[in-house]
Length: 241
Image (cartoon, rainbow, N blue to C red):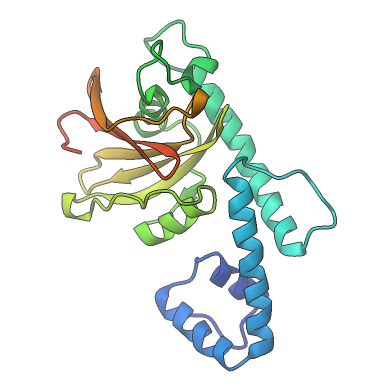
């Protein structure tokens, strides 16, 4: 539970949608009675919106010492995420067990030579099955995961709600493609079974996908497009997606 008056850390958590519902209501009430603090928070929210819009095309903006402190703080956080994303993209390209001849470029193409959302399947194998690299974001709540995803993908479709199937969103990972940032959100049920939601920009020539599905060994992928992005749900074929 936050204390009043709120600290800068509390206010940043409010802007980043990292507070609990109870704490958020407390701050809403406080800001309604403190217009000066409310104006500062509103300015930070506008900065965050600009940052999300910029990240729709790249993981990181070019360094600029003239930017506001809030944007500089966010940029330092993204540097660490970008390094993980680059390492993850390399692993997706060269770490595919049992398959030969894959190149990094092939994982970002969506032509006739590469089946739809191949990178989504390989990301599942590397991160869900093999657990390579730590998650960029861990949470037990779909709403918080949605807020994390919205920082990097503007106008994207909402995360699938798999609560009725017994799955919760537990972690997210940022990846990179030649067209821009991608991300994988991992879901898990009480039995430890895992499925993933994958989002990426469309491939060369802005290729969007018709709704479809395909089997790749023991995995099944359901894919579609919307809001300017390509999506896939990936998991073991015996789990209905």
